[in-house]
Length: 138
Image (tube, rainbow, N blue to C red; front, side, top):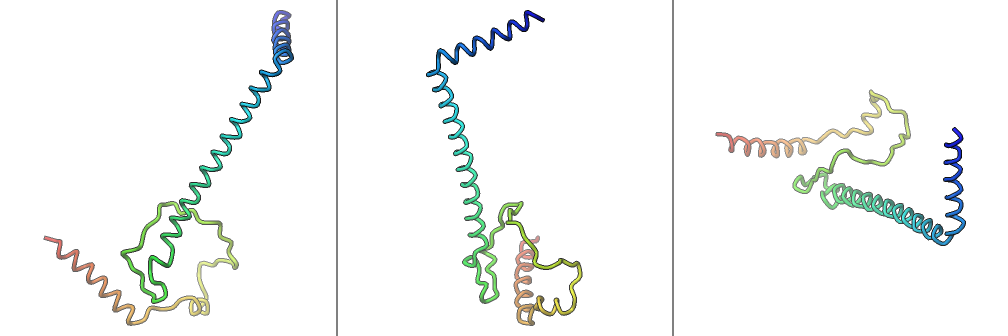
């Protein structure tokens, strides 16, 4: 037990002597370590920001109104893109309590049923797709 105490005290004494006699070397080593730590933190921050901006640019490109004509109510399906899953959206704060069933007044206010012209156009587009599929069938 005494031998262990003496070894530990010798280690502390040697380290204290090293730090007291070689102050310049210790200061240089500590500065280098701090520099490496700061550099690695900066790299981590820069890489995270680069990933966030690339996602936001992709999101803007996919969801922008340039990809489709929202004013006329028609969406060009050739320009639609599916973005990678999962979608990273900002947190959403609801302004009202969410319910499973809407009241009649809410349905009338928020839901606009499609017109007969819209339904005919949808039927034509679906018929074209079905005809292409059937043409390829043996």
